[in-house]
Image (cartoon, rainbow, N blue to C red; front, side, top):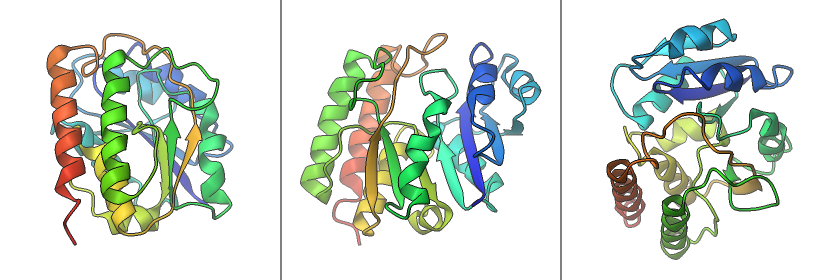
Length: 226
C-alpha cells in the first residue's frame, strides 16, 4: 500500500520541520507539504526536512488539502494532518490501523477521546465540535466526538467524495459526504498538543467565527442532497 501524508501549511516555519521529521517513514512513502502562500521560510524548512513541497497560491485550508491530494494521485491511502505541531505524526500507525485491516474507509483522529494530551484544544474548538458532531449525528446518523484534521482514507473513497470546499468547511464536507454515501467511518483517539506559534483560526475571533460558520453551513448543506 502506497501511503502519502499531506500537510497543508501557512507560515509554519517554526513547526513544519519537526512535524515532517516525526512522520514514520517506514510506513509513509512520501510527505507532501502544501505551502499555501507563506511569507516565511515554511517551504524551505519543509524541503530540508525531507518533504516534497508544492505551492498552492489560492488561500484556503480546503484548497491546500485538495492540491496535496492531486499531487498524491498515485497513493493508495491519503493521510492529512496539520503542520503546526498540534497533531502527533507518531500516532499515525493508530490512525492507519482500521484502513490497513479493512475495517474502515475513512478514519478520523478524535482529539477528545482517550487519555492523551488535549491541551491544544481551545474552548471555542470544544464548543464548535459539540455543535457540529451533534448535527452530524442528528442529520446523518453518524455518532462522532470530533471533526479534527488528523485523518486517513483510501484513494478510492477520496475520489468518490468529489471534495470541493476551499476553506474551513473541508473537514466536515469529507465527513458528511462519506456518511451520505455509506462509507465506513471509524474514530481513533489522538493527541492535540499546543500548537507552535500563533493560530490563524482558533487563535483569533474572526478566524473562529469564520471557521464555525463554514463548518455549520457545510454540515447543513449536504443533509438533503442526493
